[in-house]
Image 1 (cartoon, helix red, strand yellow):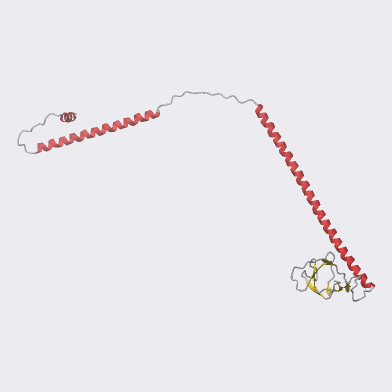
Image 2 (tube, rainbow, N blue to C red):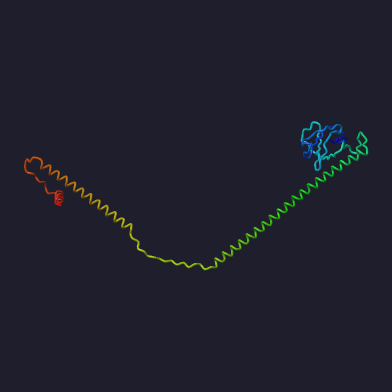
Length: 250
């Protein structure tokens, strides 16, 4: 552990100094730790920071519950203690020795060098991303140009084929008329149907007259079976009677 102490604010203010690592490392979590600021001075113990890692430092007044704004970055060297009191402070209550001033200057130089290194790393990363994006854009432009060339070639081939088809002679078309007698099927069907109807009427008529004859025969048989009381009187010769006689003769 390295003891960090000294005058941080020349106006001798009171408050809280919030300190947390830029990212967790071995032995140090990523949570904030609060150090009391009394009369502008602090006194706390911090782990030395590995390469590429800094402490984020922000000040909050007494009773301030807002989110901490981190405005400083500290790199802590692996040594016993570090005095952060400015060498030219007019309100310093103790006189800094030349060795203390050298340590402070060394800490500040390391902090600036770390910040510069991080800036260079960020710049290198951004440059790499920019180069990759430019390469991707160039690749897309080449693919677009290739697709455009393929499309132009296909369209040119299509136009040439259409022009060639238009030049060719149109095929000769001949119309042939053939006359074939069509049998009047509907007429034959109707004639056949009428003949069938006529045949049914003839059969019904025959059945009717047969029934009339049978009825007349029954009447005659009945009359003959009855005892005779006198001469049989023959009815008048009517058209119906004559028709019945003809049927009987047949």
